[in-house]
Image 1 (cartoon, one colour):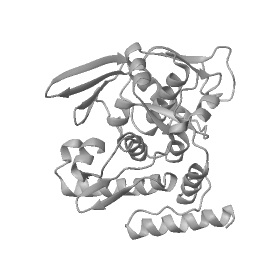
Image 2 (cartoon, one colour):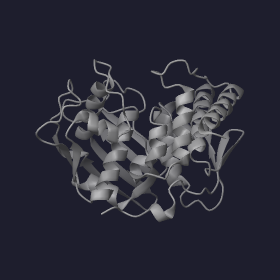
Image 3 (tube, one colour):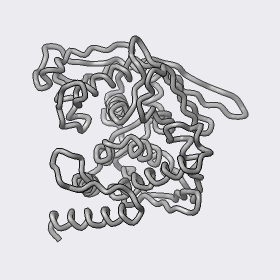
Image 4 (cartoon, helix red, strand yellow):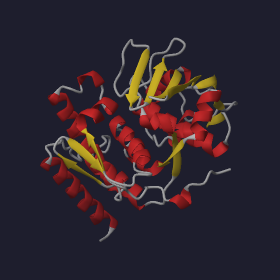
Length: 322
């Protein structure tokens, strides 16, 4: 089967799965839209490509950032078992949210592990940095991609994070700015134009130490294939960590998963809210499995069952690049 026929077959399979589960099915009618056909192409490419090793800080894989706009809120908290993430907006910024801060954190974590340095060089132009994140749209305007990216960079890099672990035996925590120093020299109106000085950040010391001491390995190809979905990104990063050392199947209730990944954890007792979340999560899990065929999961009434899975990034790839 040639590549074109293979992708058509993948598209038909995914479309049938979406229809069977009563999920919304995008139609591949416009090149400018992120259609189901383009998603299939990215997922197949990720599956067939040599893994592109990346990393995410453990606590950021376990406790997700806001998925939707938190509005005027200046503090955010997310709990996952004994782990807790607290984020406070910094400077005159608001809280980061959506898919862009997740892509930024994956790049930051990967560079920190690769270079073993707090100082990270972002690049000479905005377009160059966006390509590193797997973003190829450089649309401007108030809602354009580069405008939203600069806004989310300001929100994320100026934020303060507190990472907490607490069980019956005790409690430990750390607090740090995401970045102590930030130098962004790009001209948003000229994204392709190099500037005289590199834009760069210097990570907060404790945040940097958390990244390099507990990095979760990721395949950046998969991350970029699902980059449009905040929930998909959260699930992939969490599954990579959760299945890494899993020895036997574990059953997870959907209401508990909603508390971990849902928009409003206080609604975890609402059946309609949890059921809507379940449908969205299963749609993202289906797409993740397209790029990561060895991911083993199944569903039973009210729960998701995870089983031991061969990692998307093989152990031979897990070596820090000096």
